[in-house]
Each structure stands twice: as structure tokens, then as C-alpha cells.
Amino acid sequence: MSAATKDSDGKKVLLRNKRARHDYFVERSVEAGIELRGSEVKSLRDAAASLSDAYASVEGGQMYLFQMQINEYPFANYFQHEPKRKRRLLLHKAEIEELGHAVQAQGYTLMPLEVYVKKGRIKVELGLCKGKQQHDKRATERERDDRREMERAMGRRR
Image (cartoon, rainbow, N blue to C red; front, side):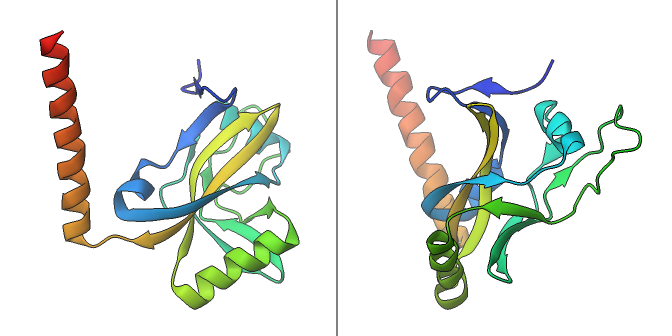
């Protein structure tokens, strides 16, 4: 049984990078295809992967995803893959140039936020992120706690 969940958009979320939204402000998000091998697809469908250290970068006019760990699929004996190889992302050339420029010139980071299946294809949601400082993290946590407290109070009134 996989740990994937069905989303309201008809997409099945396989992995989520919760740490990215905690440590960074997500300015914009972009959906990208990802070039995978067969054993990688099987491992992703089993949610045997991690996005914790992953980031995206432009290299030679192409966008690549680095440090995303996809564990080896145990039943693909000969056709295995390297767990942390760089994987090409499928984006339009204009998007690659725009995101690459933002990363180099304005100090942003491209991080994968989610990996999901949409219409039978595995997609990655990339976020154009700017780092949070400690006081920003505390403010975000305070807002989340206040929102929870308000929902509890409203629930008690009903």
C-alpha cells in the first residue's frame, strides 16, 4: 500500500516537501515534467523517495533536478538506477530562461514542493523560493497557531 493521497485536482500526490514551505517563502510555483527511468517510476509510485535536499538548477540550457533521492526498486535487478542522479526537468525554453535568471540574479532557489501523478504522468511542482529568517519562521508559526485557535473556538460555538 503506497502512502500517496488523492488531491482535489485529480492528481495523486506521491511526495511532499513540507520543509520547503517552513524554511522558504514560495513566491511562485511551476509544474514541470520529469525524465525518469522505469525503475524510478516504480519506486516513486511506492513513495520510496525523498525531496529533503533536492533543488533545481539550469545547466547547459536545460533544467535539472539535483539531490532528489529515489531508492532502488527491489525487483528491477538489471535495470537499476542511481538513487541521487541528476534528472532532467521538462519545461518550455522561455520558462527555463526566466527561472534561471531569477535564481542567478535575484538570489532565489528552485525547490521541488511536490511530486505527483497527473493523467498518468509524473510531474514535479517547483517553487521559486526565498529563504526565511528565524523571526519570519516564528511569525508564520504564530499565524498558524492563531488560525487553529480560531477554528477551535468556532467549533465550540457550534
